[in-house]
Image 1: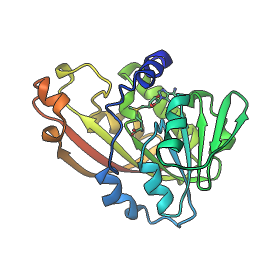
Image 2: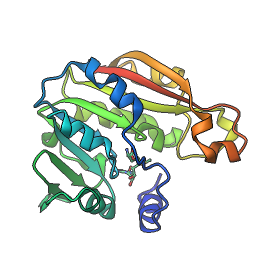
Image 3: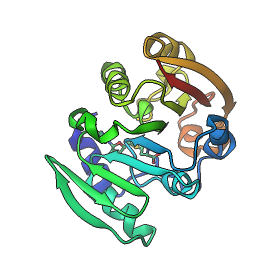
Image 4: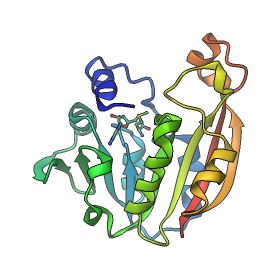
Length: 218
Ligand SMILES: C[S@@+](CC[C@H](N)C(=O)[O-])C[C@H]1O[C@@H](n2cnc3c(N)ncnc32)[C@H](O)[C@@H]1O
């Protein structure tokens, strides 16, 4: 989507994607990555996700990237975290003890910012892109991740014609076709979450699968 789309969503606080609770797949599967506590974890398109608090609670250093300034500010104010603000080139940098958020476009995020990352967490980032941009985003993610990095990818899939995203449907076939050049891929779980998503129920979407994948950067 164009940046203006997301800026407007944040300005109007139309942020239905934001979860009030930690993502259940994150809680269930994160330990499978078997990471040292002080591992740096990259969270692309992080919004103001509480999942970053979960990652920090595991002892990790969290590095997020988020386009919208209000989202970044709200992350720190909602969670009552003191924040130091600076700049790195065109990106704003907002830091608290274990969490550093780069505010700006992921496509221009300098590669140095993620050079010490060993893990990543993508929830509602891959599925935020329409088909035309999704492969480009996947390549940028791969470019930012050092070889051997492991991560959890959480996607949604539904019949394509049922809804126009975001979130966009991402099938296991798409994941295999577009990510397997850069990542080893293991599907951990896929479950129907239609009943928990009234927006999809109201639009008569027949099924909605949430899937968790374990990825390893080749
Ligand atoms: C669907 S939301 C998901 C947010 C978060 N991952 C979560 O689970 O709540 C997608 C986020 O990506 C941000 N975004 C969109 N395009 C971006 C870009 N080019 N660079 C960085 N962030 C971007 C949007 O502002 C929005 O907050």
